[in-house]
Length: 77
Image (cartoon, rainbow, N blue to C red; front, side, top):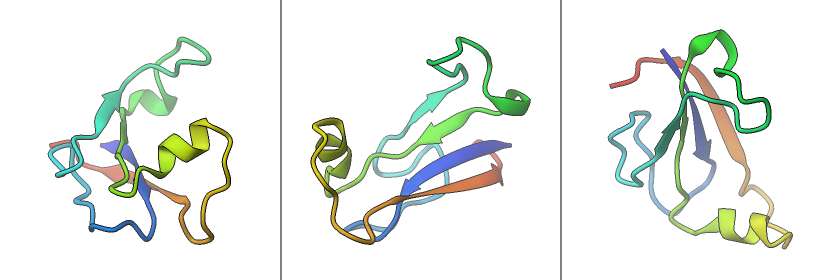
């Protein structure tokens, strides 16, 4: 099982799979603690088609409804 972080209201629909069109990255280690993610599940972080993560990194505001959804217990394929 895995945890997926998927952009809401993106320009394209995401597939809840590590083989999604957005080429998500899979992380096993929490960069803040250096420990394996909760319950040993990998986190699959999807990339937004509208590049909203770049605005978030720059500290710019993001349009309403352009947040992220966390989905749990999805098989990692």
